[in-house]
Length: 304
Ligand code: NAD
Image (tube, rainbow, N blue to C red):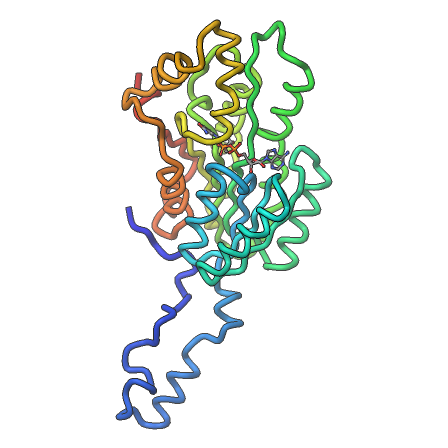
């Protein structure tokens, strides 16, 4: 798997070999033409891809945002959290990778907030070239005790928000004849587990949305895929352990070993960095022929 630089018009930040400064033998005309050929900071900015990563203040989304910034994309962060911490995160990502990093705190359960976020992103950057639909929540309860408000919240964020971001991002991608849409679904887009009715329904919906839109935009330089992680150790997993213990009458240690890792033949949690590397590859030019794919990264879970 190649770690391809996204926005590959971007030059290395070291001086190019044979630069005027390093080679006094170059004639003035040659030096001038080299200088003119060297992209200005403004053109570097405009040649960069822009990535919007929803739910990127934590967990998998933060890992993907970091991987994309490291490969040269401008990044729009989104998600909830402490304002000071998020600003520190934003500034560090920008400084570490010399890219533009913005933050938009839109609540993606709200259609109007999504519309405002996409409108602003497209106005500022011209397009969202790489759209990562990652924000998600979980709730665990038997169906006859499942709170209606939790069902509605999970469907709104884990499924409907992606419909909105995709429909709003696609026109500018079509205009540029290039786009990458990556939905962070789940092994639960392929198989079910008890007590997760809303989450499993939403993630199966994301798989269907992925395949459908991939077909619609296939001839226009736009790919759309779903990544289906098994259990990744993030706050989302950590938070569901007490409720799963309650629903199944188990201790929390039993939930980790006998429920979560029981599903994964590797008996290991998937690493955030592994999911991020896969997303970065799918966002690269080399992945142009991968579209409509529902890709497990689950330690063998769904092979069973
Ligand atoms: P996380 O809880 O660490 O992060 C979730 C992110 O979503 C946070 O940034 C949070 O602020 C944001 N968010 C929550 N509600 C939001 C809202 N209304 N609007 C905008 N942002 C909101 O979770 P994670 O484990 O990193 O999960 C990320 C994605 O990966 C989810 O879609 C999840 O379903 C999926 N996933 C996770 C696992 C896992 O084991 N962790 C496995 C498979 C799939």
